Length: 187
Image (cartoon, rainbow, N blue to C red; front, side):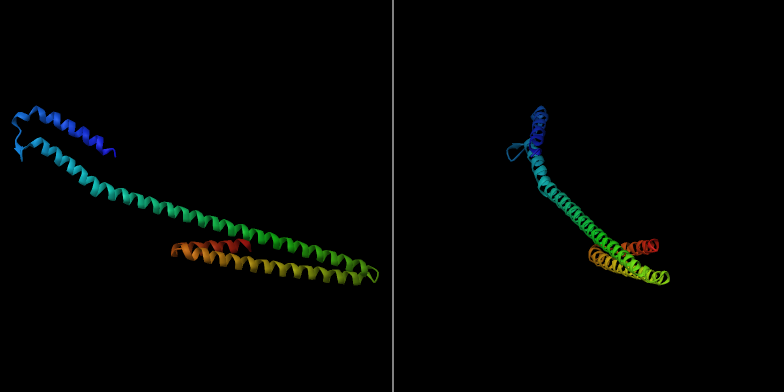
């Protein structure tokens, strides 16, 4: 430990200083007083190191480990949020592809119906085409509603699970305000 050389240099300095006035030094238990002073200093430094430095070092190390653990937990939470976010994006993209396929299928069906009804009459073909477009719109709206319901359910479940662990009352208020703003922005 670095205190040993420092203590040695203190002892050497003390010895040199005390040698100058050794003629008048008193003795205790047969040893000069300056030896007792050096021993007292060494004992004081040792006690100080034992009772102050060790607990302080342990306390600082414990605090450092706590900070590292909190950082690690925050990184895990962030990774989990990113994973859930990407999962929601993937599901949303899949549903959008399904909607597009439904729309294409609906348009294809409408064209087939229109072609077969051209033979009957122009008026009849317009009526059937309007029905096909209405059906496409209903299916599209149904798929969008299903997409919204699934996305909302997944988001709510993931957010509730994640946030129930870490959220405070102040965070709840802020998230509620942000959600309301986001819903207003979507409409």
